[in-house]
Length: 222
Image (tube, rainbow, N blue to C red; front, side):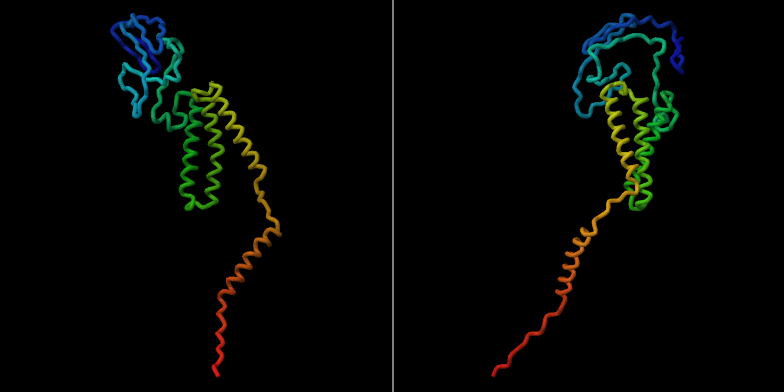
């Protein structure tokens, strides 16, 4: 009998103890304790490649793997968290960092609202379209927090740098927008007059074109 999270496995006998083995990539290793051999291969990924569904096969991204893997038995503290549809769409449903994952779910719904409002802008009107687009900033903030505290690549320097740079750019733009609320650039009166003169002149010429021509004068022959 073995307990694994919320599951209880029952078998006819105790599983043999598995020692740690190193699996080179590519390469193979014999697991004498269970009578199996693990084989690691590097394969090209053609268009339309599908992840194998065989329970004895698993696929990884070769660019993310080290030169060798460690095959070992389960140890105290090892956990596997499966994700279902409800975990992906219902906030606080996930057992894995529920608050951080909820940030990402709420941000997803908010960005959908912003996107749909752009499609129906004519029906909403400019006022409501602008109000809904204000959600973009808090939704970006929730997305950033979700990536920092629930992302698998947050500890990588390049990913952390992306979070910092995008966050600072967004903060700068928000500050600029806050300082310029209600500000509208003014035009010089002279510039407006100069722009109005050609319009008036062209209107005058257009009016002149509508004046009927004078009748032709004829001189009687002697």
